[in-house]
Image 1 (cartoon, one colour):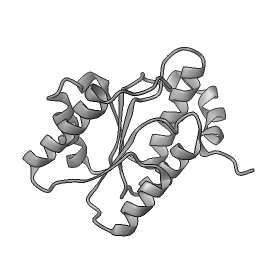
Image 2 (cartoon, rainbow, N blue to C red; image 1 turned 180 degrees about the vertical axis):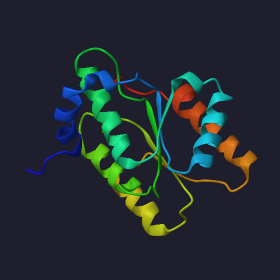
Image 3 (cartoon, rainbow, N blue to C red; image 1 turned 90 degrees about the vertical axis):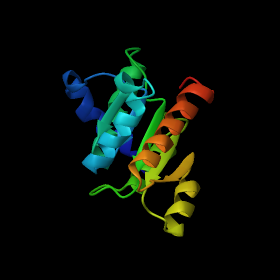
Image 4 (spheres, helix red, strand yellow; image 1 turned 30 degrees about the vertical axis):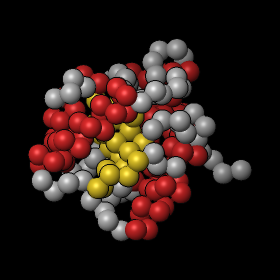
Length: 165
C-alpha cells in the first residue's frame, strides 16, 4: 500500500508541535506575492481577513494540513473549511497537492478551488479527475480578480453548507 503524503509528515510535526501558529478557515496556497496579496485583500474586504492562512508552496501546504489534522485529532482545532490552490506552484505543484489531499480520507471533504492562470484543457480535466471542487481562471484585471475572489469566499463560506470534518 502506498504511503500517504500527509501521514509521512506527521512524525516530524508531532516532534515540533510548538511551531503551530493557529487555525484558519481559508488556506491560500499561492507562490506569486502579488496574486496572494490581491487575494487576501479581496477576502479581507468580505470580512474574512482573520480567517486566512497563506502558504507559498505545495510542501508548505501539505505540512499545514498535516499539522491541522494532528491538532484536530487532539481536539485542539480543525482543518480549513476552504483551500484556494494555485496549480502552477514552483516546486511541488498544485496538482500534486490536490492529488494528496483528495486521496486522504481526512482531507477529502475540504473544498478545493483551483485558482490558476492556466487555460490548458489538460489541467482542467486533470483537476476535476482528481476531485477539485471548482476551477477558476484568474482574471488579469485587478478589479475583476477582486470580485471573483470575493464571490468565491462568500459562496463557499457564506452560502454553501459544508459538513463538519
